[in-house]
Image (cartoon, rainbow, N blue to C red; front, side, top):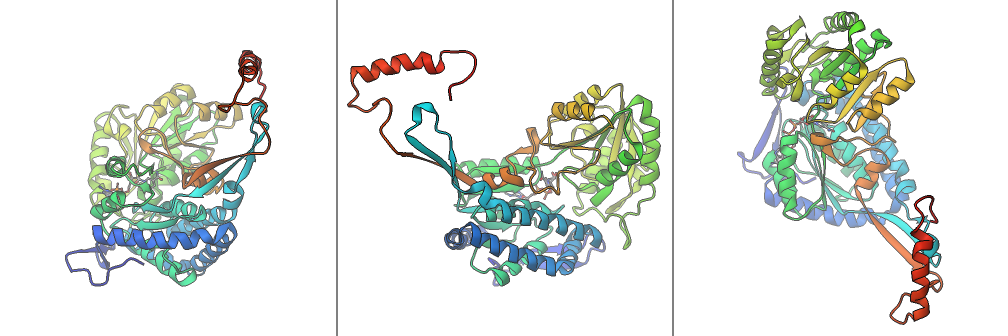
Length: 499
Ligand code: NAD
């Protein structure tokens, strides 16, 4: 682990429990030198890691996974202490994380090993193969809302693809990162997963360092800064940013199921979910019934206490954003559950507001709190149009009993993922890539695309015999004549293909 024990006092990050404000722990604040040293150590670790091959890495990752699973209860407490989320939520987060670690470990060879590709008629003399190689060292910058699941979505796939990782967790939640690094040191060793704690300046130093790629998860505003810094060395980045996800409810939807999932996606984790539910578009004919069911379920939720369904806001300043959005929404809309009075310090009770102006901040900007807005639409096509009309494009959900309707809506939604008759349905499926479009970011974690995101493709063309036409400097008039005849033969037809 790259934790500097002799760090001066001012160069520290202290975390507090969002529930009672008590101090949880103090960590070093990694400066430029600490970050660069961590990257150099990881560089050495990367060489060893690469030498392990697909099979060796798989075995190490499965052992790492088992160590996490065996100590899951302890890790859940570490997660809860700094985020304030209930232990049950932390356990679910661990389970989802391990599913991805397992998938990445067990599928890396199949996806990334060197494979033959068709060379085409003209290249019958070439044996063409493509293989995927690790970048080297990946810098992972993480957020606080899912301090394990979210960064591990990058770390698992980066490691499985053969890279070493330097992980800079959020300054609000370094605990799970330090815990992971300890498990790694115990089960695998070598500097393959290195943690550097610190704040935005530490993240900035990582983006400026000699890492070979940055995997950033956090707000769109910070992603732009990371990209600007990384551009100095032309370091590529994958950016997993915010969202303003919508749920679309058709007239034929199962309204109980829709309401269950709207409440889960909107209020779960106190609404602090990048792909959580912030907006609902429901077709007029079932609007009143849906609102009634959402309000009925949401009003049963307990927020903030020891046996709560969700905890307090992890980031104190986010409470102000939620208050602003609630007040903004109420300029045009109607509160059907809670309102500004639901915001009691760090804990916010569920708020549901209807019929809000589409151009308000509450409908255009990420709220990241337990506020759900329900707007009526005349058709599912209108719902899709409205859902697409924000700068974000992370995910969306559609509720309908008609497969054709669902497929049409899914195709028209401008997002990186769509759930049908659930929310966040894609998040636990190892084979499904995750990531956004527009200001929700670019690049993909999870699935085969996630493995390739942390790899560089290397093409090899091996000549096995003489070419049909000599294209060398020794070519003759006959060869050139042949080329002139082949061009229309191979490419002159507007239909079909010879390749
Ligand atoms: P944030 O942007 O404030 O911080 C994210 C990370 O960036 C932190 O580790 C922070 O220390 C670091 N950082 C801050 N300034 C930096 C700089 N100049 N250079 C480099 N690093 C810097 O985000 P947050 O508040 O921690 O997380 C909440 C946001 O994350 C929300 O917008 C949420 O939607 C998003 N998020 C997205 C996903 C996804 O997969 N798309 C998942 C979880 C959270």
